[in-house]
Image 1 (tube, rainbow, N blue to C red):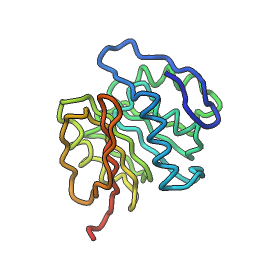
Image 2: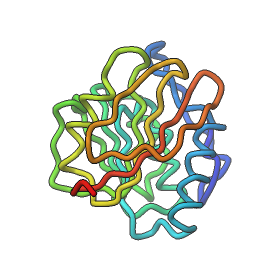
Image 3: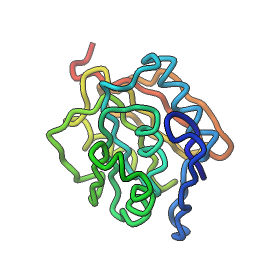
Image 4: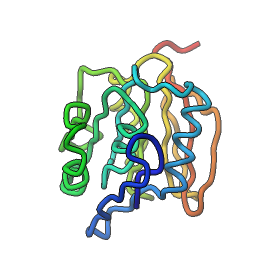
Length: 181
């Protein structure tokens, strides 16, 4: 597992020892940031990203490497993300690590991008999406990783734009609107 782009490209990350943590593959992570770049442009410096069910923190740290202004990494177990974040001491002011259940976590911060990678087949994505609504900026891009055969009903105000598959995973690309059109 490594950072695939940006300032820290090639930097190795510590793979979690917990068998319940399944990091997003390098290939899928690279695709996610290519999707964001195609939709948002190359400059992420004014944007905030939240990595929900962050596990190892690979997506959060990738976002920092690729220039996001602020990043939040949310998980009930933040041990793995803390270990990886310690390897980026110059970026500590950009990363907020939150030990919380994503279905109950609240923040006054508004995020422009949300990446969510809940444990597969446990029904956690839908309630976590509902909980995230107050924390998303209007027009926020939402990328939801699921097992390729897993379903996820998006709450209202989320418009599904595209679905992509990467091995065992699929990523739903959606847009959040605070007002229904």
